[in-house]
Image 1 (spheres, rainbow, N blue to C red):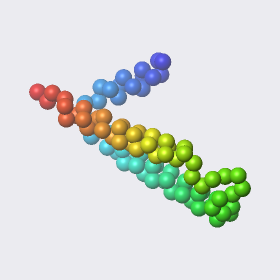
Image 2 (tube, one colour):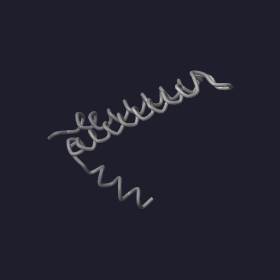
Image 3 (cartoon, one colour):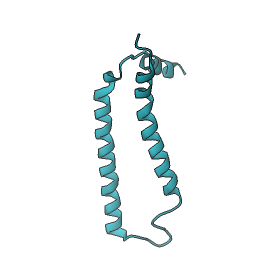
Length: 91
């Protein structure tokens, strides 16, 4: 609990979102690297084992949940700070 307060309280006090611009670019680079690693691993697995192996299906109902959660997370987090910045009283 104390560690959480030490990390989050100073972040809440930041007034301008531009402070986090470099961290945003770094995060985007890490997301791109992660997607490339996942694609490389998937292509390797398909190359070695084929499209569908014994006892496994290519697409399961879990994929729909994963896509929905991903869209919600990326869109939701990306909208919180800009909306706060716009609705804040500038006077």
